Length: 124
Image (tube, rainbow, N blue to C red; front, side):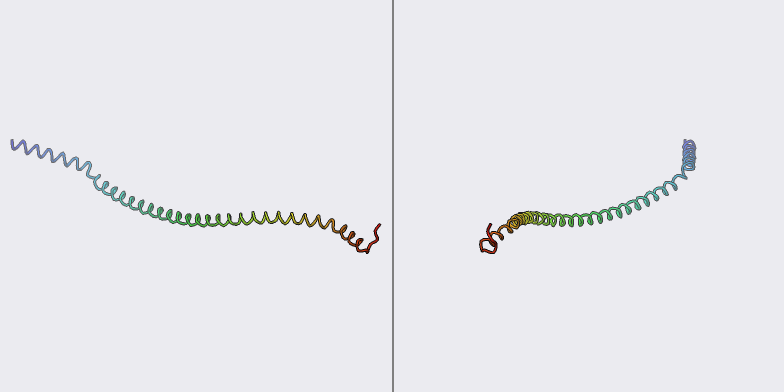
């Protein structure tokens, strides 16, 4: 029985050696692929970190631009109010001008009447 057990062990060792021989080349390849994947992962993480940093910088700049645009918008509102006042004042000036133009149209007649009243011009 010990002899049969020894033959059985030798048979198993031979079969294990065959399997190791057939697939033994895969172990170094697997280790290399694993190392390459870890390196690729590190490169990818570094690249994403760099891109994320750039996006954060761009977001910061856009926030600054947005703030400045809000300021410009506020100032434009003030300009708009002043422009409305100028338009209103211009309307008043135009009305006064019309009044003065009407007065100026009647001024020669008024002068003639005054001159007639003072006797500088003979009355008809």
